[in-house]
Length: 629
Ligand code: C2E
Ligand code: MG
Ligand code: MG
Image (tube, rainbow, N blue to C red):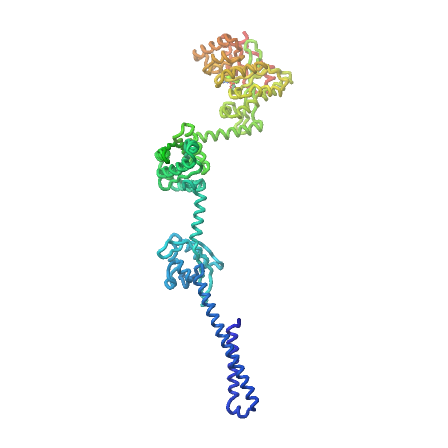
């Protein structure tokens, strides 16, 4: 297309030429000009005239095209799918296209001159203020989302893009493009909802629960008020599903959800986190006891009969409760696990009830767990060792054997007696592992002594748990097989009379099986248990060891003295060997000898000692003269 300026310049030049030629064609010139020149000039004039007219047409055509373009531009500008506005630095709307006016629900004439902020939703005013500060400064495109107001209509979500510019007077303005993204927002909201809510009951799901719980914990810290986490699991829901079908099950879940929701206060949360599992967060409790009535209401809400089709269903729930804050730092996961664990306790206790998580008990369990872990490590780094305490015949001075007693050489706490660690692992499988280590170590020691020409009977303490392990007899044989040079008859096992030898028949069988390969048993701490007589009658043991408490108190307590002589007569009656523990003084020994008990173990003879000291001790040991009379 020829540019308008060029056309105009062309026309101007031609017009000047014509006027020049016209002036040349003045009357006098015509008279003196030769006729052929005049013709020539006339011809040129006509040509110019035609050219001028043609160019004039062209110009008009261009003008029409320009007008059309302008109109198209305004159509496009006005009816663009997005709204355009120009804002002054102060935020006044200087101009706007029709779409912007339609979006804001106001005529264009009324729009111009208004402050843009007047169209911003009141909850987004702060954001708008912050954005404005940025988009005026930014050289680049700046985009953000806000809710804008539309006259007589609900607000709409707008996506806004701004660019800083200069208008024709070189004044700074901002061009603003706005589009309605309400639908996109709704869609996003829907996606969020699906991600955070349970489709069946419309309750928050696990994702949102975790969010709410974190918020709740922060709020609890801020307000200084505890919160409760309740883990609720329906009792027997599976049976209802199986009997009445899933549709009924679903119906029940929806109804129950609504019923439970109604018992809660605004701000509390109930979430569905599994098939029939719900978690409830009770916020801002004045005291933790305040949760109890609400928990009872929840229990009631679940046990209210529910009518489905023609029948009525009744279900119950088991609830586990825990509170925040606690003495220890705790996170959302652990809180939920505590509540879950407590719920499990409620189920065990018979369902349709609540159980409050016992943090103290839990701390104890955790401490025990740590302890066991430490013991594992101690075993791996060989921190356990055996001490040996002699058992002698006081009358003859003969050494009958030694008792192996475990010690823990603790890197920080020094040498620990078994009472400081064995009770902590009593019911734990590690006690079996440790028990087997003791037998191994004792047998190894016997081999070592044997090699030094020092033959010694060794008794080893075993826990009732270890004895009653399924494969105790096999395990013992396997261990013995590892030490083939040791005569099994030189090994003795001590089992506590106080221990719960639950299945008497089985225990008797185990002891009998060991007897068959010459490993004999003694009943340790005898006299402190309840069923001494039954034990003596039913268990094929070889020796009883009188508990040291009777020896200790035999001079002070006539009862103990009576029991002591009773035990000694019993042993004689059952033809069992007998040995007294805790013989601390020569007088103890004298009295025992008088009563017919010749064998003893105790400080009056020797304290427990490391293995390497024993041969020396044995070489120098001789019984007290008072005993040998
Ligand atoms: P126990 O089998 O009755 O062992 C005798 C305990 O009495 C030993 O305590 C010993 O040091 C102590 N004792 C010995 N003579 C005297 C005395 O004259 N006066 C006093 N006051 N105490 C005396 P220890 O070594 O602390 O062991 C305590 C208990 O731990 C043992 O009692 C036994 O039941 C258990 N135990 C020790 N080692 C093992 C083991 O390797 N395995 C198992 N399962 N239990 C063990
Ligand atoms: Mg013992
Ligand atoms: Mg004992």
